[in-house]
Amino acid sequence: MPKIILITHQKGGVGKSTLTFNMANALKNDVKVAIIDLDWQGSIYKSRSNSDIPVYSPDDLNEIQSLDFDFIFIDTPPYLAKKTAELCEMADCIVIPTKTGIYDLLAIEQSIEIVKQVGKENKTLIVLNMVKPNSTLSTEMIEALENYSIPVAQTSISDLVSFTRSPLNNQLDEKAQNQIESVTMEVLELLKNNI
Image 1 (tube, rainbow, N blue to C red):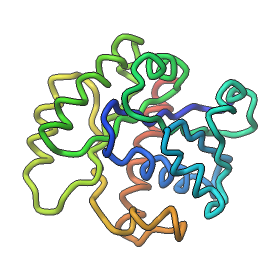
Image 2 (cartoon, one colour):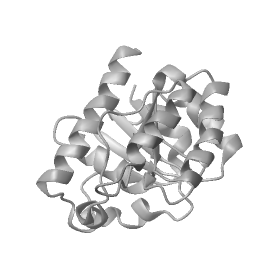
Image 3 (spheres, one colour):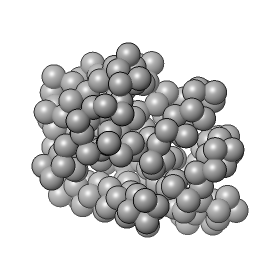
Image 4 (cartoon, helix red, strand yellow):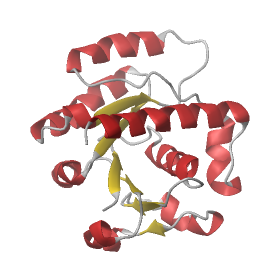
C-alpha cells in the first residue's frame, strides 16, 4: 500500500503545489511516486505533460489505496477544513508549508488545529517555504512555532527562481536541489519513525 504524504495549509500562496511537485521529483528515480492534485487551480494536473511523474485528478482520490506506488503526494487547496480533516486521517505524513510572515503565522493555527483534532501531531512537519534571503523572520517564525509542539524542518526552502521554473523545465539548480532533497529526507525520516 502506498504511503500518503499530504501537503496542506489553510492559507493560499504558501507554495504547496511547487513543494509537492519538487518533493515528488526528488524521489522519482528511486521509488514509484505519483501526485494527486486536489487544488482547485489544478496547477500540477494542468502541467502534467511536462513531467514524467503520474499526476491524478480529484476523481482518483477514492482509488488511492489501490494505486501501485510507493509514495503518493496529495496537493490540497486552501480553505477546505472539513475535507482536510479527512485527508489528514488518511495521510501517513502531513507537511505544512508556510511562509515567514505574520499572516502566515496566524493562518497556520487553523491547519495545526485540524492536525491535532485527528491526532497526527507526531506525523506532521512544518516547512518554512519561500524564505527570503538575509531575513531574521525565519528565526522569529521558528520561535513562534515552538508553542504548537509540531516539529519544524531543519531545512528551509528559499525563495529561488529555480523552484518557480521547475514545473516547466522539470529540473532545479544545485542549491534548490539540495534544499528539496534535504526536506524530502526529513519527511521520509518522519515516516520511518512513525511506522
